[in-house]
Image (spheres, helix red, strand yellow):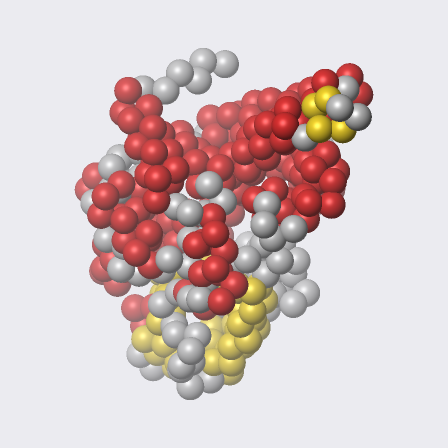
Length: 381
C-alpha cells in the first residue's frame, strides 16, 4: 500500500500540528468544556481563517481547498492527537458533506457559512429505538402548503448545543427501516431558545462533548428546508455515516498515538525499586503489544480512507473493518495506559484520563465493534 503524502498534504499536516501544539491548550479546552461554552469559538474561527480546514474536503468551486479522504484523515488524526472537542466531524463531515451532495440555494448558503467558520451543524438522526441503524426512521415530515411539518424524537444529537442548524432525517414515505422514503431537512436551531414545537434537553457527555435530545412536535419549516430530492436522501446519508465513521477512526489513531507516547515517556521516568519501570521486561512487552495494536489500527484506517470514494460495498466493508479494529485497539491501549500510570491515570491533572474517556466513547460511536463485525458479515454473504 503506497500512502506517500503529497507536498501539499504534508504542509497541511505540519501546519495543523504546529498550530495545535502552540495554541490548543488542554487545560483551557477542558475548562471550556466543563464550565464554559463547551468549546472555543476563537479556535474554530482560526480553523477557518488561518488553516482553512473547515473546507479541506470540499471542492474549490464550493470555497474549499479541493481535498478528499486523505485530507480528512490528516485533519482528524491531528485533532485526535490534540484531543480537540470542537465539532469538526459533526459540522464538516456530516454538515458540509450532506449539504454539498444535496445541493440547492439554501444548502449552498449554509455551506459557505460553514467554510467561513460562521455556522455549526449537528446531525439529528439517532432515534430512541434505532440505535445506530440510520435507516430506522420513525420521525415524519408531511407537506402542508408551502411548509413541512416535522414530528418525532432524536437522541444524542452530538454538538447540538453549539449548533445553529440541525440536519434532520425524517420519513416522507415508505415503511419503518425502508431506505426509500427518507428525506433530509435543514432546520434552523438554537438550543437556548428553541422554536415553537421543539423540546431540547442538553447535556455534557463522558468525553466532555456536548449533546442534546430533541423532540419535534408539529415543527413547521419552510419548503426550502428540504435538502435534495424528497425521499431520496439515503445514499447521501449512508455515505456521510461511513465518512464520519472513518473520520472518528482516524481521530482514534491520533488519540492512541498520543496515549502510547505519553505512556512510554512515563515508564522512563517513574521509579520503582530504584529503577525506571520501563526497564521491566513485562511492562516492555505490554507497551510493544500497545504499539502493535496502534499499527494495526493505522493500517485499517488507511484501507478505509482509500475506499471512501469507491463503490458502496467496498467502502462499507473497509469502514466496518476499520471501526471493529479501532474498537478493540482503543480499549486495549486506553486501559493499559491507565494501568501503567497507576491511580494517577484517571485523575483530572493528567491528560491520559481525558484521552481514555474519549477512546471509550469512540469505541461505541457510530456502532460498536460487534455491530460492525455483524455488518461486515452481512455484506459478505
